Amino acid sequence: MDNVPIPSHTRSAQSMPVVAMVGGGQLARMTHQAAIALGQTLRVLAVDPADPAAQVSPDVVVGSHTDLDALRQVAKGATVLTFDHEHVPTEHLAKLVADGVTVAPPPEALVHAQDKLVMRTKLAALGAPVPRFAEVTSADVAQQFAVDAGGAAVIKTIRGGYDGRGVVLLDSPEQAREVAADYLADGVPIMIEERVAMRRELSALVARSAFGQGAAWPVVQTVQRDGICVEVLAPAPELAEDTAATAQQLGLRLAAELGVVGVLAVELFETVDGAILVNELAMRPHNSGHWTMDGSVTSQFEQHLRAVLDYPLGATAARVPLVVMANVLGAPQTPQMSVDERVHHLFARMPDAKVHLYGKGERPGRKLGHVNLLARPGDTPDAVRERAHRAAHWLSHAQWTDGYDEHSGTNISGANISGTNISGTNMETGTDGD
Ligand code: ADP
Image (cartoon, rainbow, N blue to C red):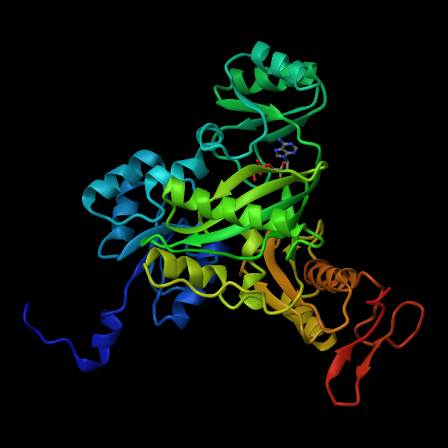
């Protein structure tokens, strides 16, 4: 059977590269979406066939990212292996590299997104601005650090945290002592850092290809609630031009110095004095880059594929002066109205809302999807934010934030706030400019 010719209709498909991604979450799902446009199919290692990416890719290996056999299986024959999260044990990655697998980002780079202490230490050595930090080897160390930092500090688990899990904001040295003692008693490695007085959080998203080409998107503002990103403003409003340029250059420099291949998100704090400090690194598509799907010439998902496949990178310019991304986070109580019906009503009211749903079951606070809203001519930033928030809230809660009634087209005060404009386009008007 060795010499059976490949039928001509399958030949071109076979010549396309195969990117394998570890993790079957929404990032893999949206990377698959970008892969389709490039004539490819993303291969996915998913824990469960119901995972967001496993639902949509026909090339799925079901298994755990901590199981070396499963990792070997998904990597077999793939052009490159990449990630939708950073939780693969470093020693497994070393074995894959020894097997001859191309891993992007390579394990020596990825460790800086896996281990916060390694990351902080390396960034400090590279001269990148970071909050003052220390490894916590005893409750005494934590208490003393907090005293030296003026009382307020933050304890973080060194590995395994995400969406604010494993991050404890502390108000006093006594609290630092207690929290540290609890973690250490459980054998969890932790670090402590100064609690930064910040104006806001920013993200510098860049990509670096295997060849070493770099590209940076406009710097964005991220808004977090309870440690979870709820909103992204692209670009960050009223960010000083030199600060934005510094942040972009920092992102590109770190990508190069750490040897990142793929997308790198550099999460930043803008301090009350206007300085920037690096908080976190993520070496994969990132929530702060979801706006690029509709708002940039090249989406972060396409760019990640280009980077790991060593294609030339795409243009990163924004399409409009402001894009707002709002996450759809599961409501405290799942609404009776089906998601399908919610989408229907949203589209009826807001034809320009770009909806991205991840195919996940609804649970309180869970990231179920996101909505991108592009500024229309004359829009104020607040108007775009309000529309994005309204759309995302509607999708998760089945409630309009302004009391609109989707059946009568009126709000609670009875005023008609929806209708058909002269050009025949069904447009939301409402109270956006308020
Ligand atoms: P995760 O790995 O879970 O994303 P982060 O280190 O990004 O954790 O922290 C989550 C959130 O906690 C940040 O977005 C920020 O709001 C807050 N935070 C983290 N570190 C500090 C700090 N040193 N000072 C003040 N707030 C912090």
